[in-house]
Image (cartoon, rainbow, N blue to C red; front, side):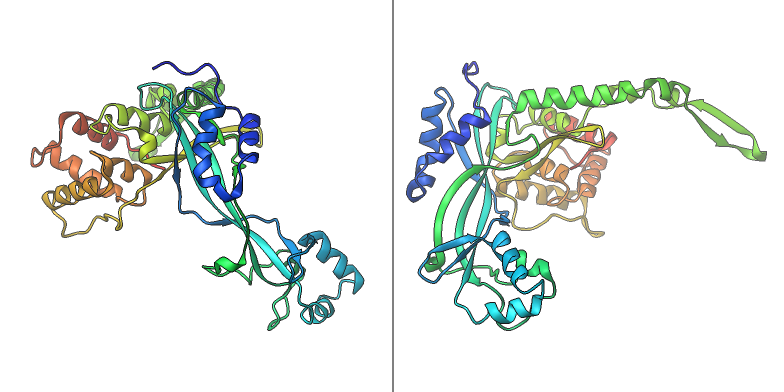
Length: 363
């Protein structure tokens, strides 16, 4: 399959999202994307990562909106010459309320080719506005001005549906350069930026030496690039993740069916940072940790159980590179078992694991 001629861009996507009716946004999202960008077979996957926007409104009990909380509250503080206690005493006697927007991430993806990295990813926020509570905490005075301007006290894990005011609405998440990515192109960018960073250091590294103190105080100097001859051949972890997928038994399945990429591309203090953190869409219920009594054969049983649970061959390996769900020591133990011929993996998976054990990476 060849990539469609028109790749979605941020401005076009924002137009599509703005046109969704909140009453049917969940059902209409994929058809709207497909209509706007013919040739893409979009799917969407939610992520359980609740967040709150810093946008709040002030409401009267009948639902009339007075204005945004921050400027409104700043004006109330000015009325009492910045006296926080006085503002609190006055406002707690009113029936005014505040709203807040709660959201969670969703990732829309569509293949653009047969390779593991041949797909488009769009990072979205699915957000609902709720009636959060009274304008101030009636029981406790605020500890500072920020508690009035940006209150956290009314938040509860669950609000009744009767307090739902608007939404759901979808919007592009404000990720640093990673809201819309074509993954193959993004990986190319990761590799290019890393090469450029290292090449920029070449003159300095060609002059650098490593000094070692030996017996009797003798010193030995080794040129840095002689000690690390493959310094300029470094492959970023993002590229290795996809290379390992392509070369393992995970390959028949698509990456976006199991992982979302929290991508970023920004410049900080003159240094460009490009990369992603993979986030599992279907993590196992329990972590697989290395324990002193765990034999390599028991670990093999456990990784097979993880693969069955997540529905992906060699899925445990990629959860291990993520660093949370599978302890990297599990991978090292199994790699040791492979070398000692005590256990076996399919040949492609064994090669990937042994390569990782020789030069590990993680997110």
